[in-house]
Image (cartoon, rainbow, N blue to C red):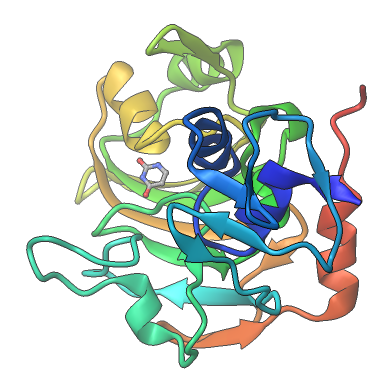
Length: 239
Ligand code: URA
C-alpha cells in the first residue's frame, strides 16, 4: 500500500505537491469514490482517476543526457524552442529532474519517477552537483573565501562545497573554475559569481551525486541501470 499522492506522482502526470493539491481540491477519485484525505493509501489494484482521467500505471524510465546548448529543460515550450525531451526516444511522458539554463550544457537526468526525482532535487538530501564555469576575470583568493563562507541568494545561504581554479588565462582575462554545490536554486552558479562581481561566460554540469557524464558526447544519452536507480532511492536525509 502506498500514499495516494506518491502513486499519482510516480505515474509521471504531475509532481507530488501538485498531486496533494488536486486531492485536497476533490479532483481525485479512487474506485469511483472521491478522496480528499492526504494520508489515504492505495494498492496496485485500485483504479485512480485524476481530474477526470484514469491513471495508467506506467513503467518507470530513467535517462542521463548530455544536454547541448540551445535546449530548454522542459517538456514543451510556448516559444517553440527545442526541449530536452526532444532528444530522448521514448513514448513515455518523462520530464527533466531540475533545470539547466538554455545556454548551459551537461548532465541532466530525465524520468517519470517522482520519488526518484525528489531524492535528487530536495535540499534535505544534499546531493552535490559539480559544474565547470568559465568566468570573466581572474578569480581572487578572497572571492573563493566568500564562496566557501556562503552567499545569500533569495534568503538562502549558498555555501559552495567544493571550489577549484582549474586554469587562468591572463591575456584573455578569464578563469576556468570547478564548483560543487548542493543548493538547488535556479541559476545558482551564475548568481553566485554575479554576487562577487564575475560573469559566467560558459557553464557545464559535470556531475550530480555519483552520476557523471562518462563518455557521453553532447546530445547523447543512456538509460540508468537498476543498481543506479536503487542507489538513488536509498539516499536518505539523515532524519
Ligand atoms: N546554475 C546556473 O547558473 N545555471 C545552470 O544552468 C545551472 C546552475
